[in-house]
Image (cartoon, rainbow, N blue to C red; front, side, top):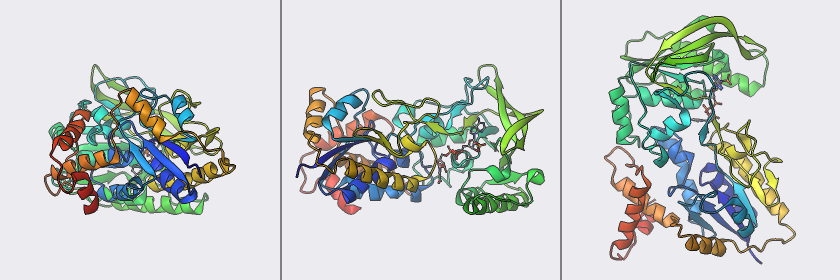
Length: 454
Ligand code: NAP
């Protein structure tokens, strides 16, 4: 039977769960996972906070998928520049967009261009060692920072800004980021929501963690708290009640630590003030009307030397696939975009949900591909033709074994208890591979021994 050739663009959780689901759903399938970075795992590496190492353990599961015979990883290959989507569709029976949402939504208010104002995709990518953002060098000046948004990304950013170097020692925060954060002297972070404490999008476990910081107290004004939560989906209500209970408990503490995390509500960003760099954010006070935040006519200004807008992400468009510019995603019929073209994860749904939310999408996508090719219409050349094209264009792709060599070098370079010292430039990563190739062959190659160690 001719195997079905599937290309998955994006080696993050959506891509890997899709590969896993395809292996389960289709007997004869060959899967190539293509990523523009030499490193796999997408947001697990560059989005999940550096101090949330247990969340990053899911990479072990993805590694098992990558090591399967039918799966190949092509890192360092950008679809849209090295090879177009149209070309990929002529080579593979099915192509799955698992691109994630790596761009920032913007507020569209005056002053957003000032030095010291960053979207969370940029700021999080910078402190996570993303090669594109290594040179961001964010302008950060204490004592106060403002983080706009009441989602988990806002919590991540605030936590990374206030944790002590000792608390970050077991993380993979790059040295340059740790140093810049320490030098900024931030002692007060305002996490600002445009709606109220019952409308936060935090998950309770992540919120609770903000009360367990060594040098920082959460501070909240109880005035705006609702008495109870009525109506709505029972599961959502339970989450809201848990969040409110945690926030109330925060409000009852007496702050005594050197840093503060101020939870502020009913404030909608109106303008960012400063000459060339940010000095303050002016917020419009709001009240709820039909669930939405509407301005009351009053304003409040919070002085600060850093603003991070954690208000959600967007996908980047890709030539050859229709794009919904307003929502920042690839429109589809529940994942089916066109004949042989599918979307999963944030590329399909927009930037909501945790890593595990990608599994149902992935399983659905695998079922759709199985159904769509049930009549035996597979037969495109797949991997061999893709490899030939990369050779012709002199694209130096990075295999999963190559990644294992990079991974081993990162782990070996760490100062314990840090789990790894990330390479943060392409040049460093490619140098590791050149060195590994130049080394005389040992009875057990580096990558293979590393794979066994895991
Ligand atoms: P999110 O959960 O959608 O939160 C976005 C926040 O930005 C909301 O509070 C939203 O307020 C606010 N916002 C949007 N537009 C705004 C505007 N114009 N002005 C002021 N505020 C605005 O997004 P996220 O924090 O980027 O997270 C993305 C997904 O990743 C979420 O599903 C999240 O749970 C997940 N994630 C999970 C973890 C974890 O599990 N540890 C960590 C990070 C991220 P409104 O509610 O009023 O719109």
